Length: 256
Picture 1: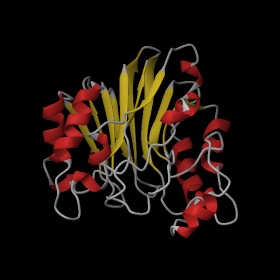
Picture 2: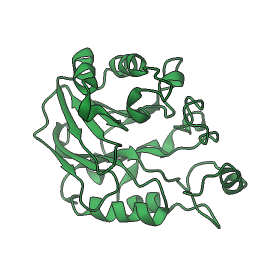
Picture 3: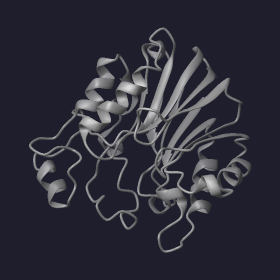
């Protein structure tokens, strides 16, 4: 089974009117993923983008979560999920909760896009997420966490560099790792933690789309519960000519 996560940047359409959806569609199709989580599906509630992506990629089942903000989420899959729901209360954007059939049995899949402001705000989003996680059931959490991991190789001057660029969400006095630490304390495993350093960052892909994203960082993650501890699983950041143009984030994919 392959699951892809892709933050496509503001609905796949640029502020200059450029349409990146053909590139995004090609990336999704070439991944051959069984399930795809889309973040920043901006404007998809009033367009045919979700339908066209579904039809073009043979991901015949599509679900749109209309967020509290304009940053919607979407989930596409080859096989119809047993259920798909949108969680909006108690979070900044929204959360998709789907139940799928996986090799380990019925599995809860959560697609999230955490609060972009502060680590405290993101911890609030996690408190809501935790209410929907049943420790007795297999779970996969994928999302743009807007947070850093202490396991990643950030240089000592990272905080100063990002603050000089006008970015304050990663901490004021020191880099903050609370969100990823919390997920690990729940017993969730960061699938990308053991990747090679060559696959470290998930942004920036196309820095022209988001000028503030100029430092290599990993803020997109897959976490899995203990039920997958005996399941061989690979993790890959998809970097190629298309993904360097399609979004400010690289897509990530797990295979198991």
